[in-house]
Length: 127
Image 1 (cartoon, rainbow, N blue to C red):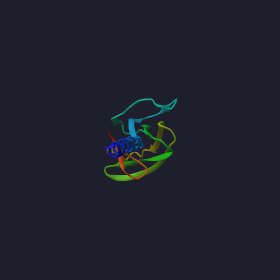
Image 2 (cartoon, helix red, strand yellow; image 1 turned 180 degrees about the vertical axis):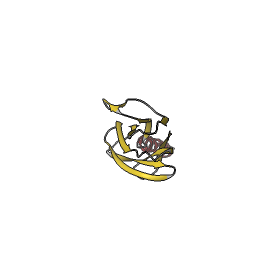
Image 3 (cartoon, one colour; image 1 turned 90 degrees about the vertical axis):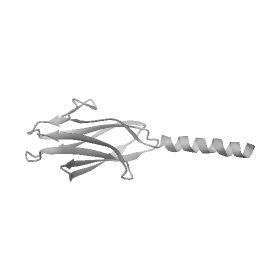
Image 4 (cartoon, rainbow, N blue to C red; image 1 turned 45 degrees about the vertical axis):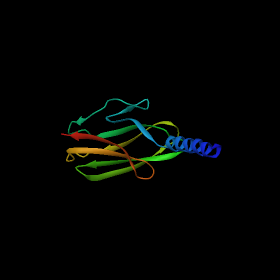
């Protein structure tokens, strides 16, 4: 009985440690500027003629150095893939994308973990 109880306790510890490795995106936004490591604004709709945008992401849960990737899409066409380091359990990072005038419509940035698994999708539109 003690053996089973010990195994059960070990299993719960391992599950807790493994879940601690899971990254969690606690904040993500499309913004026109980063100021003091924070987004200046948070946009769902972006006016045509905007020349550059940023995807700001705050990630919790890293127990070791790891990576996330921002994949920028316009109308389901991948336009950029940016690999970003995550170096602490509460990490802020961002990528930027220059926007051409003809790139209007539905956009999204997919945030992926280092294994390419989706963590979050940040949708927005340019009109």
